[in-house]
Length: 227
Image 1 (tube, rainbow, N blue to C red):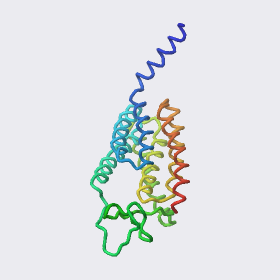
Image 2: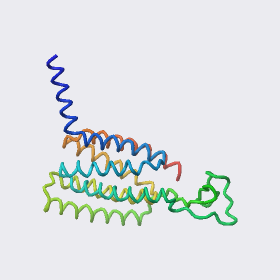
Image 3: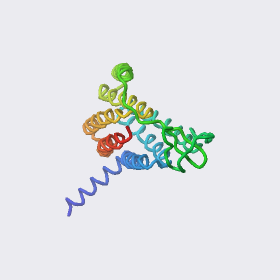
Image 4: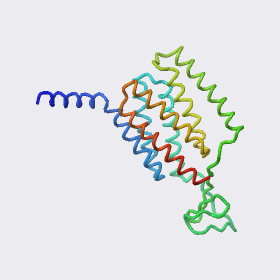
């Protein structure tokens, strides 16, 4: 009985010490499901997740990841505003015959929505020129972050922190442009994050990034159908 009580005390102590990280991991998982369903509540959930992980990463000296979460927080605020205000909607023009609300107009890349049409960005493949440009940009960001973290901070893992953050920046831009290959970058980012956070003992975050890693395979499969 004493051993069981001791185990429960250890669990309670761990939960008390890591409640903020656990909350961030739970909201991060919820964010993924809301994103899949294109539910507007993903934005406030994303804001809460990013705000929590700014604190978690700062406490654990992952300064580059902390800055990335700040970037995500700003994007979540903008995304929420754009979704609420219907950014990208335009009046339905004469002669643009949509085939009913919610159906894709043939050959236009527009979706009808109650008398209005929203221009849709189509899924595309990465062009060689764009790929080379992104590679050079990534190398510059990676090298710059590594130098700053190594010289001016007490980060215990400046190389890994810079690698994950810089690659996430590139992947996020590719996602915004609906470039199919961005899912491969997320596979690399999520796998590296899992290994890194295991070494730092951030186990709820490890679970979160494992889920992200698995969802990246689902993203590859679903987006391939749209090519």
